[in-house]
Amino acid sequence: MKLGLALAGGGIRGIAHAGVLKALEDNNIKVDAIGGTSSGALIASLYSIGYSPYYIYILFKKYAEDIIFFNAKNIVLSLKNNICGLDTGENIEKVYNNLAFKKGIKTMQDIKMPIVIPAVDISESKEYVFTNLIENKKRKSNKYISDISVGKAVRASSSFPAVFCPCEYKSHIFLDGGALDNIPVLEVKKQGVDKVIAVNFKADDIDDNSNIMDITMRTIDIMGNKISERGLKKADFILTIKTDKTGLLDMEKIDSCYKYGYDTTIKNIKKIKELL
Image 1 (cartoon, rainbow, N blue to C red):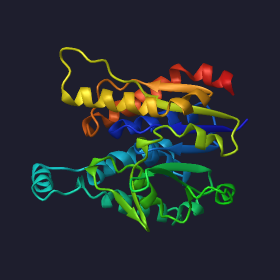
Image 2 (cartoon, rainbow, N blue to C red; image 1 turned 60 degrees about the vertical axis):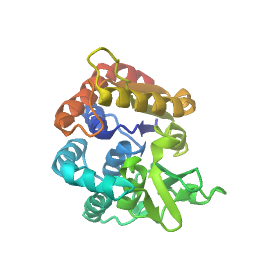
Image 3 (spheres, helix red, strand yellow; image 1 turned 90 degrees about the vertical axis):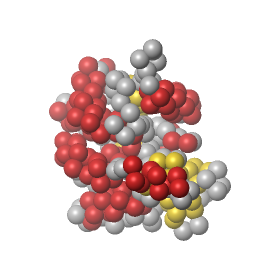
């Protein structure tokens, strides 16, 4: 029985996916194929090239500020100069290419474990998928790209509008894959697996104490789940993680989000084992 995992985007909350992977590992459940969008791609890519779930958590903590660091000066300059985002995203690309090189990997096609990472070309309004499988290269569709560096693929998929500038690659202009496929269940299913677990995030409830970020995150979650509705129906199991009003870039909650992912998986581990 081959298992695939499809990981949703969700900003800093994406580290919860490492907690999910650690819980599966602790219960001797092997993941045979993986896919992720945006922050889901950050975790999926590291796992696919051989980093352990706990080490991914450590790496995420180590590099979070390098990857996502904005100060007042950056914001003012961005607004004043009409820059496309608060950050170029180049740090993401650099960090991930370095981590891939340490494992002897340069491009997506060098990865052994089946992986899919969606991004959206805003000039074409079209989804593209960065992957490594030969079967995908043979498809008639030209939506599959494998000769791209791991860092560039991750950067493209996680270029959240207004936060990061669009990612240019050859003739493409990529933005966050969540615009069309926030939880790549259907693409993971194509990787020769028998079952797919989709991991998404619960939209936080809004009350009198909610702030603008709470409302923004709920909107993102509603949109992401709606966009991925067709794919979620095809998932064999949906693991929904509640992260207690964690903001898009709320780095102070990295530890708690990792634990949310782990604990939620452990609570559902019996159902997951029955599925397999």
